[in-house]
Image (cartoon, one colour):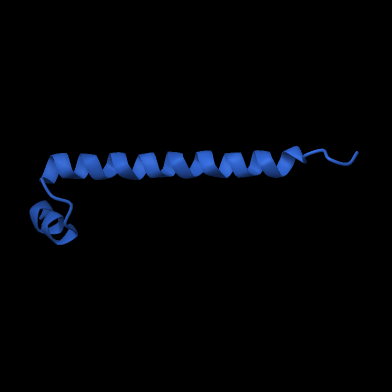
Length: 51
């Protein structure tokens, strides 16, 4: 019938948003862990401190 919304594209869009937020949260938590351990987020300094 006319006027109905197709649920599959909406579900896929919502799923992609949720996955994006989850990936962002993982990256942010990794950055926080690196900062707590090394005291910086500068990759050159982290690489130097790691050696």
